[in-house]
Image 1: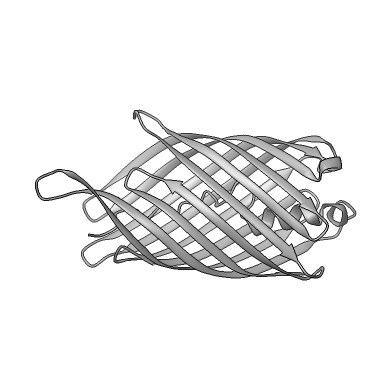
Image 2: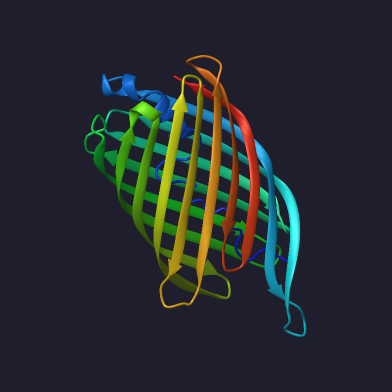
Length: 253
């Protein structure tokens, strides 16, 4: 059975940053406010447990599970007010080769303030290659939120509202799904340690369905320029559920 839509749609992965970007950016916030730019790159590898929701020949619902390797390359460039990150990934699961690119740009009006508006825009591209079908997914993601800093706790909170119009192109036809996303990202850092937790609820317009996404990332830095990052993702979608684990080195410049 082929995976019609592998939900590595991380959005991502990516509100307001992707994994390493969030905790690394928080850790270097003081330097950034003084005008220092930062570049991060991190190759990661791990596994993805995919549960495909399908139907058998009699039309009865069935779940098909498979676990496969996932590879990724993350890059971040951050200045005082802007953060740009990009995540390339490849996964092999449920007999489907999935290639994707997740791009995000975030703007913070006053990073030194405890409370500052946050504007963001992302674009997600996926190509899913199966024996008898190819699927292309194109997802623009405008985002509006507010960042609340609590420096005495080494924490920040980022509630946000996002909208997406996800276009899915297949050999059997095209469709567009519109949805609102309600999310919260919490960051914590202390010396060489960092962690962030992300949750959002995807409310699909015109359907009595909603999906949950939760992501937990942890980072340990051994110096100003090198560390290890690990992440656990749980994602729900109309056709699949995914539970993945990724780990790799993080290089900061």
